[in-house]
Length: 169
Image 1 (cartoon, one colour):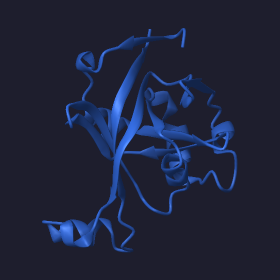
Image 2: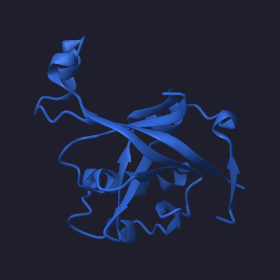
Image 3: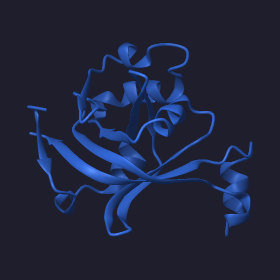
Image 4: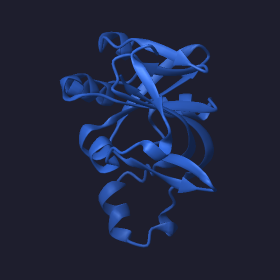
């Protein structure tokens, strides 16, 4: 943690559209002393239930979903452009098949038993509050279901309280 400083969520001034949609993030959780991560480019930040929150979505077949489901917390980590190749790799290879974190040459650290990566520029620690599967009958714009879910593998939505934000010093 010595390379990071903590900031309050209200002082976090990064664009979620750029961070998540363009730069991507890693969603990381731990279960049974094993850490797994996945690259994500959908999600956001806001305020819900009087709390600062992040929301993420994970498809049901993703191995990382098992880790998020079996943990109270997870981290979202953001990297500079020099990590684009690793982020692409971490989004296409399953942790079921190999130790992809080791192969990506990332160093796992922990704060409050939540894993994150030393190489990140921004770390957002999250405590789960809510989860729900996207349902076909809830799509107001049915084109989204047809376009994004041809295999009907609807994402699970997770809303989590932002408990801590670290940025590189």
